[in-house]
Image (tube, rainbow, N blue to C red):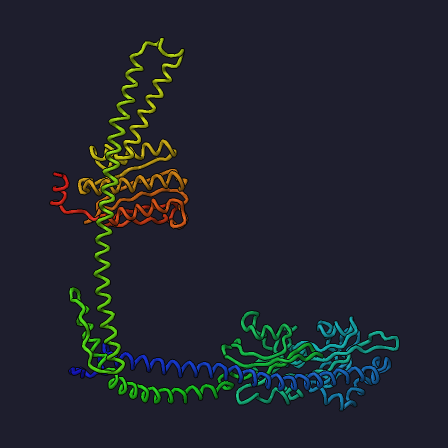
Length: 595
């Protein structure tokens, strides 16, 4: 059936075609973006791994080159100190100065010059000569070379004379007996051209670069960015990947550096100095192809979404017209009080078969509901009759016990009291009287449990007081009864609440381990809410406990009067039994009272 309306269908949010089209588009877009996300994610991982391997290979080459350069210079100093500096020359400052000035090969290795110090750490000879006479005894490298006799590459420091950033290589000078008699020092200044510039002056990719780090001193030695020379390294925790490099990790990864820039970096150790080299590049440059792919995919997604939306709308409009007509007809029948009617079949295709099947199911459900309602009415009537019969039999038994057994016991007591004392064995008169009194008390108790006379004579509150008093004596429980609005309950409701209270108290005595029980009743609008709460340890699911039948009977008693009974654990411990019964109006109350 054609759908004629003034508002365009594509603007109607209630239209089935609109919703199906939107759902289709959402699924389509989600599918494309999920694929794009997965593809970009995998591509990012692959590119990161590939670039990381390339970075690691490059930085390994750089680190090996620096290590070789440092090793070569350190070995050159050691060979020079062993072969060219004799004790005689070391003792002659002028000869030592001439020897240093005549060593162009060694001088070419150190852009900051070379110098020799005596055992007191004072420079004896220097090229350039500005260091002569200056004491370097306070420098760590001087103490290591003189006292430990070890060759050392120092930390990056500010030159004592040049006031420029540099690091030095110091080797001990030994005499014939291998005693340290002085120190030969080569200086590499970091702000002047040197072998390090051949590496750090280059950029890695377009915006990346290299860094040389001395982890034992937590300083940057030099870097492509010259502002990092002798800059302290980031504090631990600022850059997790850099922290791993500082701990000796050789590899690559992605991180956010101390300046807030996300970078892809790789590190390799320089063993001779205990340093490591880093090659790094911003991830914006590294993953630029992925960003371009995202932009292209966005354009493609928009175009494909528009195309898919148009095709889906056109197809649904043609195919779902009969279905939409059936949905409208069914919606018009869903109003309260409207009986369900079979839907009209307008097509012979699968939609027509679907509507025919729905009509068949509707007919079957209507018949079954009618049968179920009849059975429910019969069961309810039977349950009410059975309950009345049980209560009538309880009432009859109560009268029989009271009238027959009670009277017989009373007569026996009178006979005992009328007999002379000599008719009893010595000391047994009181025992006979006590036994008869116990039988009379038991008879009264049985009568009260079968049909409490207080319930009929004084009402629910008095009957509950008696029940709680007697139960407190048995279980050493304290009870609190708080009942009001009794006039709103008819006799059947009062008896039902009393029976539920009996069952609840019995369960508490048997299973709860409680010390206090609160019994309360309040009128709440058109309903009466009756509650029994204890402070015991609660109970397991009721269908697995011995008292499950009793609890089920409690629910059924409430259901018979149109109410409900809920049994639930209390937050502070224990169990709560809540009964809610519908109250009759004033006219009905007056009829019950008159009856």
